[in-house]
Image 1 (spheres, rainbow, N blue to C red):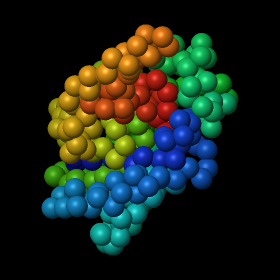
Image 2: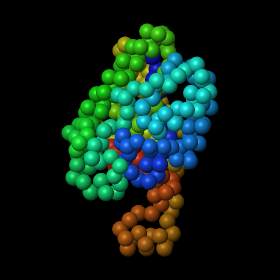
Image 3: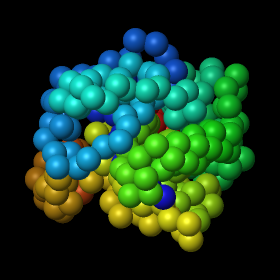
Image 4: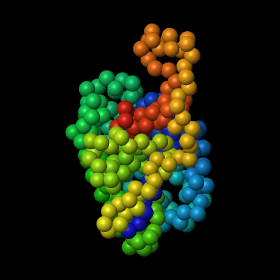
Length: 253
């Protein structure tokens, strides 16, 4: 069976604005996201691809544009089943405001029970995404053979949900998985079981370093406000990347 490369779209304007985009139209890549997309062909150089599949949303199509230009023999095909979770009435709202919603605790601790008002459940999101992967596995294998590799560009919660399925992990545990913008995840499917061979690969390791030690003035300020310092660097930055998904404190946009 084929190997699937899952790419989360590059950083978007909604990511930087702290908004839960969902299916909100017009959400594009920001400047860094465009740079990430431009680097994708080089990162995948030497990897033969049988197909390019995208979420229909703009930020995913923009992420794949440089790769499609580099490989004109591969037209980008869209599949709505790997589009972002439908967050319904939450779409377009600030994540800081959503963190106060009672439902957010369910999203964090028991996502298999979460149903977004006016939208879909997280269980339905996972089911449609996994169905799409299984269908594309069969199609790619039939057309290109069992050793083929193909690529899907999707969204944080979708990628994490597919990874959880591949690992035999309950959806309630998928917040433990982190995939940053424009990260590459790879799953090799076989008749016996899937194998997760890459997870959230970006080539960037600096964020794994411990956070900078705050100055005495910063420590005093944090004590007065009850906030932590150093969140923009080191391990704090890694945590911030993980928190860009709604399943990891709001915003799998």
